[in-house]
Image 1 (spheres, rainbow, N blue to C red):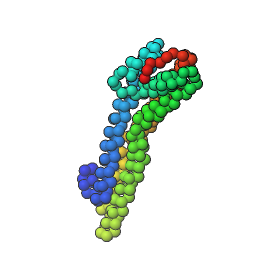
Image 2: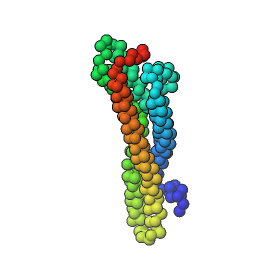
Image 3: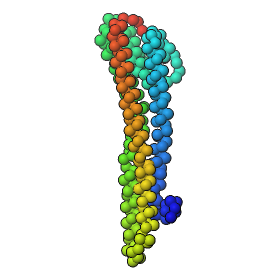
Image 4: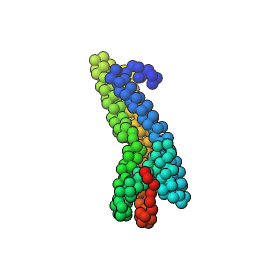
Length: 227
């Protein structure tokens, strides 16, 4: 009664359930490793941008350097670029340089960039949540079906010994074990990465407010570069 033997002796439906759970587990671990690398890069990018931004660099020069960089802007860099680009565009269009309008435009651009950034960070997290939620029930379905088959076979054979029914029950319980194997890492990873995303959101949202306050303190008087 090895694990492989129990799986090979199970009914086709239970084997299908096990295969489905195995695929779900593989997908879950692929997402887990991918999100771990993504979150590590996101934290490093935010740390690097903050260190550079708050070093006293001129905003116009910093914007020019950022836009001439061929690397895609993510994280705080994308917020800064979106906000300052909208600020520059409105600054050129408004001869009166109304500070309230300029700040509102910058905030609008940063809000769109923040939404896009959160969508990128939360990508595939719903898949982890789904796997963690339904895998135990899928495994339980396979178990129930396998036990039903064992007892039906027991009734037909007329043999009521534990030795006759134990292999079928063991085969069915493997499905429950596989469901838990797929669900537990997915739930743990989902909770961990959701917390990481929330922390990054707080940092991005805080930067957005600080950047708008910086523009406000400058009085929207400096002429930004042409975007």
